[in-house]
Figure 1 (cartoon, rainbow over the protein chains, first blue to last red):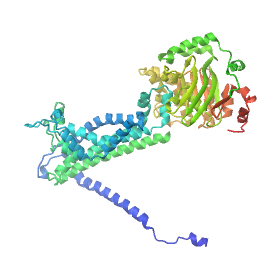
Figure 2: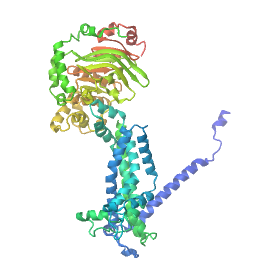
Figure 3: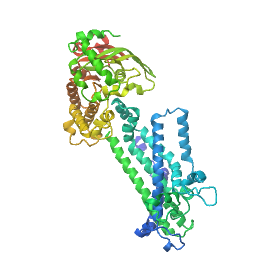
Figure 4: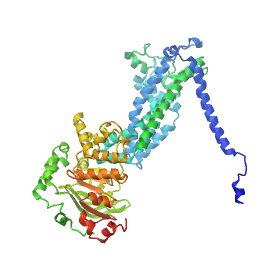
Amino acid sequence: MINGQLIKRSRLVALGPVLCWLSAAIIVAVCAGLVLYPLIIGAKMVNLEFLLTDPIPSFNEALAGGILTPIAGTIIIILIATFVTVPIALGTAIYLSEYANRDSVITKSISLGVDVLAGVPSAVLAIFGLILFSLPQLAFLSSKVEGTELALGSSFLVGGLIMMLHIVSFVIKAMEESIRSVPENYRTAAYALGTTRWRVIRKAVLPAALPGVITGIILGIGLIAGDTAIITLCVGGSMTMTGAEQWWLPWNWLETLQGSGSTLTTFVYYSSPAGEGNAPNKAFGAAFILILIVLFLNLTVDYIMAKSKKVKAAA
Amino acid sequence: MILKDPAKDSIKDPFVPLTIPGALEKNRNGDQKSLLGNQKNLLKGEKASLKNQENSLRMEVKNLDAWYSSGQVLERINLPIFENEILALIGPSGCGKSTFLRCLNRLNDLIKSFRLQGQIKLDDFDIYDPGIDLAILRRKVGMVFQHPNPFPMSIFDNVAFGVREINRRIKRTELAEIVEESLRQASLWDEVKDKLNVSGLSLSGGQQQRLCIARALAVRPEIIMLDEPCSSLDPVSTAHIEELLLMLRADYTIIIVTHNLAQARRISHRMAFFLSGRLIEHGNTAEMSIRPQCEETENYLCGRFG
């Protein structure tokens, strides 16, 4: 009897594992295709000239220029949005994790606000931003529209500020998580050395949470680099910089920031047949650069996480 | 349930002679300044003035009761702590030794549900007085924890942490001197002098614990409390730390919580036996080991429970 039970009843492989394997294989194949296709086509496009010339709106792909200003635009938006997001997100995260009483009404409403903000689609944020910054009182952030009462409401500055709304909840959560996960014994040790509460947070908790905090910021930057709706509506519908012509000169920077332009994502959109351009290969070239940037950011995150895990393992 | 009169201790105990009233007075005045805000005093000089008053009363716990949300954890504790002694707190797990220890530097204040009644005096100050500067109190009463907990930063920065909090604009050379001296006191200097910039977490468990001792010593405490400092260490590291404590005794008052009775006998001058939140008995280590006054103490010391 026992012998009989020990022998496998059937040599048929169960269906479940195969389906699981197949699902995973589909995902991998799609990912590989998504990354490889633009990479292969886009890589052919990329050369120094492509990277260093301004885009020229044209229906002839050969004359359509390069992606210098979209690259600059992406960097500008990342810098502005990160610059305003980091202090606000860090402050909120520290408040929520270290000071707030979890059960108080204020804390709950802050958390609710953060959750709601995380769920708002970026197009909604963009249209909100466009309306808000069209107010004439806020014209200093973009430019005045001739002949009307309103401001234009779209510029790099406006785009950067709205981008902050897009990523801030995400960054807050990542930072809060990493601050909460700092072992309690670091705090106790710092208190026992005669450190005040704020200095404990600043000198013992934040340094220990730093890898997580930086990871949150980098993932936020990835979100910024990838968003299109906010750029289209709040930065404007121009491939080139509409501010000063020599936008790279320091004394023209303010004008550039108040003006419109494009980033890599909107360049892809405008250059594609779906947009107003007809330069799909250039779009792939820009997509290639965009993917490189995002991959680089993700690898950096992986590196930081691996390093901090090593430190934690040593502890 | 205190069967021994704490006042008698100082007479019975050969290690603790009678307190000299005049000396204590001087001591009190000296401390008044530093406990209430004169931080510079803590870094230098102050120690020297206390040297000649060895074995006087440093801390005194009177009628201490304490509660967590779960209920009362300490009941009617009365215990004197003397200058330059090693006092071992012994007793089975959960008897309140660690809670008691954390009352002495008010670390329990971090726990919201914690409540305390009674008096703890450091020299002439009630440390639960609202006017007490917690930061300065905790610098005077340093603490080393059960599990080594260096910060995730370099060895140098670990030791310098508390010093930088006292004086943020301290000169690098001065800081380096304090760090070296503290590491030497913790007998770790020779092992780490070539890798001060390496993360403190890269050290072995025993080295990490000595690093934590050095970190506590760097702020020049007067009393050092250790909460089962050897419980996660191997015998060699433990021997290292015991040796170190015997050396430090000359300059500091040491209070050590230990599960290890043999360790208490090896290094302590006095023992205090806790059981279910009460202080059953305290006194000279040798005397208490041979002739415990209480049955519970005897049962515990003989290993009949715990």
